[in-house]
Amino acid sequence: MSPADIFKPWLMKIEQVTEEAPDVKTLRLVFADERQGSEFAFRTGQFGEYSVFGEGECTFCIASPPTRAGYIECTFRKAGRVTTALAGLEPGETIGFRGPYGNVFPIQDWENKNLLFVAGGIALPPMRSVIWNVLDLRDHYKDVTIVYGARTVADLVYKRELAEWAGRSDVKLITTVDPGGETPDWQGEVGFVPAVLDRIAPASRDTVAVVCGPPVMIKFTFPVLARLGFAPENIFTTLENRMKCGVGKCGRCNVGKHFVCKDGPVFTLAQLRNMPQEY
Amino acid sequence: METDKRSIEREALAKLVSQWLSQGKRVLAPKHSGDKVDFAWVTTLDEVSFGHVQTVQSPKAALFPRVDELFSFRSADGRVEISERDLGALPETVVFGLRPCDAAAFAVLKAIFNWDSPDSLFSARMARTTLVSVACSRDDEYCFCTSMGGGPGAVTGSDILLTDMGQGSFLAEIVSAKGREAAMAAGPLFGPATSAEKESRLARVDAVFAPDAVTAPMARLFDDTAFWEEQSRRCLGCGACAYVCPTCACFDIQDEGGVSGKRLRCWDSCGFGLFTLHTSGHNPRPLQSQRWRQRLMHKFAYMPERQGVLGCVGCGRCSRACPVDMNILEHLRAVAEARP
Image 1 (spheres, chains in turn red, green):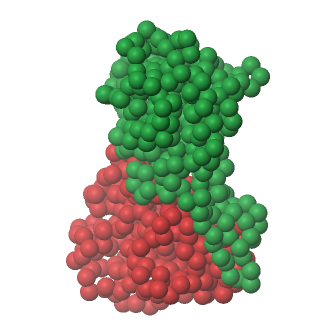
Image 2: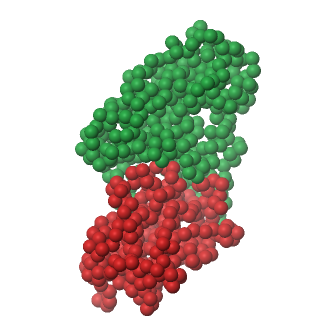
Image 3: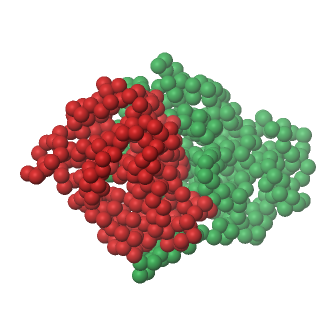
């Protein structure tokens, strides 16, 4: 399926550019070669290497769900050389994509369970793929709860989708912003994600938790989940170590003997407890 | 390992080098450069150094160049065209005069590049490269091949291994199918082997420990912060050890040349702080002690478990190159003696 040369990207046409938050954009990408596009398959949780030719490559998850065929999306914050170049591109322009790489969220194993998604800031994108994936298969899952926080109201990404989830009777959405990040008309919670999670205290029975966020959020969220009774094997996260190759060779994403690019990016807390703190 | 033994005289060897060149092959061999010996492209046997202990750099660049073009691209009007490397056009190469440890190191590189999805550029170069090694008649305080499962006359990894038997005569052990092909092509330049044994001609490198003595405790030492701080205190993070190492293969990927340019693979090192630095500013390995631990753990714990090979061949180059005299043998001895 992938090109013979593991470093040769597919050419992708930018179909749509969405401004999500200050300096945060989502690109919808379609395969320049339709046949490649029709053969392409991925599963939720996987990532890719996206490139602007002449600037280089960078690593993002695939932020769209596999249930929406025909395109993939990535969401990124403008920060370095490649993301600055990506942020300057318009629909119709061409970028490179290699992937899909890495393991997946085992959503088949989660059928008939409640799902709790906890995300912070720019870490909603990897979770957006799995959220839409389960919402597109809504009958297979029980209660779906999403707790999402950002520094300020402006920093919340996917605002249209948050509004859509808030309006659904089969989704419970709690949004929060850090103290001081609220606007006068802010209707959501105010407080850090772990504190808000502690306050709403979702039940852990028959529930799988998925947590994505900055390291400090993850660090304070795990103990809250433990207090709520979540077993470590029912808590999933996705690691974001720096990568170059995506295929287990370049040597930098490892956490001890584990390659985040091959054995991850998805790990359970039970797995992380047996791994060194190198993420 | 049973090898097909032949002999070759120095004059015939000189002809063999000329023959390779006339067949369009490139010959990479140790050559004097100032007071050092390093690998260089040679055109005659006279340029080749035999008496040295070890070259400054390893010959890994023959298969894994310091800067390597993965592909090139042209962009115009929002369209991009990618031109792949013509793997069939890669030159045939003979690496000549490498030491048995360096020949063994190519198998380690192969494991790194091909353990999962095969790396076509590396593999194509490997298929076009013949390794004609020369056994070691001298060693120095930095050599420890025998502690890593190798030896000054070890044949593993070489296609042909030569041993200087004195008076301009070499024992030639034909080790691999590629070696047999090379010997066949050389025809009468190789003669029948004499009855002389090579052992007396080899350097004597005593094993300090068995590989297991290092790999077994290594995996348990990860959390011993004080140990790694002590071990890495002098480390400058310069990356010299990784650059001269025959098995270090960590790399970066960079674009060069603007919108119509090249995507390059470049050598990198786990000793650099930038190696693992996240865009957010977070760094999983912010301390030099953690980076030194990574270097040793990668070679002696992770690779044996994940790729089934030891990531070190005991060539001693990192110790010779280190500007602050960190001798890896001493660090490995400390690991072997540690009681975590």
